[in-house]
Image (cartoon, rainbow, N blue to C red; front, side, top):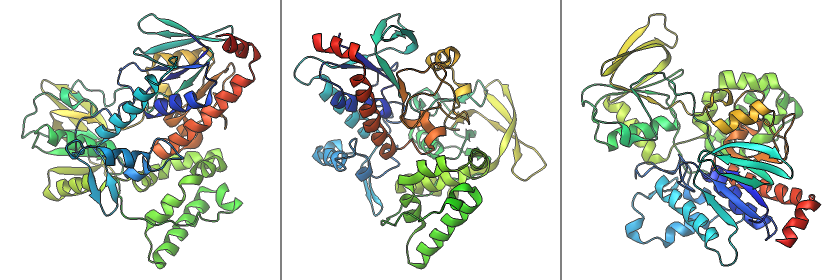
Length: 461
């Protein structure tokens, strides 16, 4: 095989990294794209088949390529009418089912695999368990016992799952609704978390015919806001003092929203205007201020920044109005598993008297796990060997502005996407990740150009 760069993870982050590496690397280089689940391009986010699971961004913002913003919209438009089921056109934009987006990404990878000429994209249907340093790069090891020599690797595993909280044998995986089993129509189901995953979980429960009561619990009981029509708004002119204090920065953004309201504009215009500079704002805040944000403001930011598609938001609003979805603020104190049910003790937010809730199942919709909680064997081995380390807040991996892992023994290892959450904060949406993929590919290609020994191998391949 020609000299190789490995990409570990084949959801959106990994798929984009692989495609852009193919464009940036010399033609004599190959890309190894590794995915344990074997669902290349789809990942957890786009592996669902439920038509009601819509993208949280407008189709116009979902192109895989920064320089071709209409690419996904044009792909949607070319589909026969019978294959566009679930696409919803709203005043806020067009929203497509996530299953269709997964198909779009899978087709892009297929096109790269079957491109005429010597194959350059190689798909590995196996989980990566280790990257062992060796002369010239690493030995990539898989669960199946295979070993591949690679010159470097891009870690693109997407959102890490947590340790399986809440701990209960009645736990239901929101990403595998087909495993929910038979649910009693009159007994409640508890959803832990009230963000976008909760929206999907309720949709999955209803889609599988469960008509019964659902209780959704989070510390503040906040649900995502809904997308609405927006117009461009200038990036706020922030001062050095604004960037040094979370209080000042919050006050400044609120003042900008008030100015927008006086001009007859929507708060969404201001929040969207901040998107290009979020990483700059995050890195500009002192570490103590970033920690304050994570403790106090993160839930409020999330429900304003990461909004729901109008049909999905309308369904949740209707559930709440009908009383079939009970939204609560508080936290779980204890769970006692009983045959066929779990007894959950809850401390309501601001309350002193605990409440007991008996449920037939508990859906974990708490979202993203932490590095120190992950059971991923590759990440555990890399951190144990000193090739990677958590960021300052344990949200992801420590990395520099060049996306290279920051660790005592880090070498040709890069990362992008949700694993950069602690470094860039906003790095989970398609517009963020596709730009990162272009930059990572360029940086990896530049690294190759600085490796004369590997260049000689490439030239003789």
